[in-house]
Length: 198
View 1: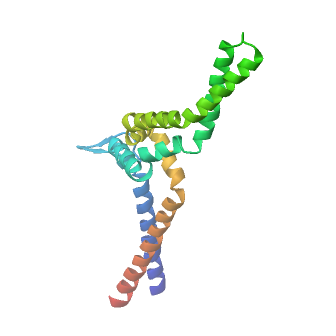
View 2: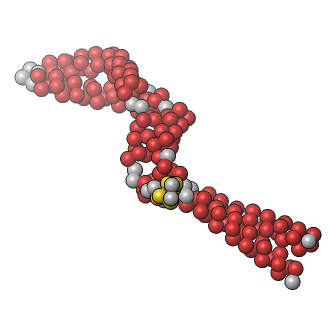
View 3: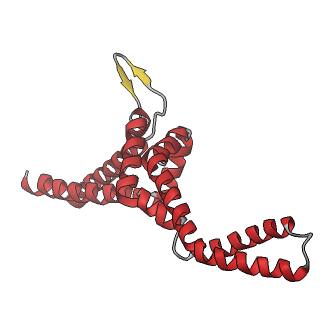
């Protein structure tokens, strides 16, 4: 009989721990719209603080995960210089060829070789100027934190909830089961103390 009493307390406590954690996780997003209960207004934590959360995530990503320097290094790297040189020479040769098409072929070839030699010498300097201009543009005009904040704020709250649940589904499920185990453990201690001490 005492064993059944302890088992009942363990089962009830485990269920309470599980349901409490399920409710806590649901209350992160639900209710999405504020619900009036007497003088109080109830709303999920993330919908209520959506703009603060978006700003915090944007700031954290910009400072810890993806800075402007990271963007700059990914957009234009040293490996891009050779491709830049090839494109530049092709474009300039095409323009020059159109302008000198009336000249004899031998003269055209000499001019094209001269242009290519000159572009070979100048392309590195030009590439560095373009890279500096792009880097300056990114540093002055691209605010990673504000961009992420804007994207998060543009999401529908249901989409934001779905996205969060997809990303953290395993972890949230684990939290629910931890509530069950902790509740059952506390129930076991409480049941044993109640039955055997009183």
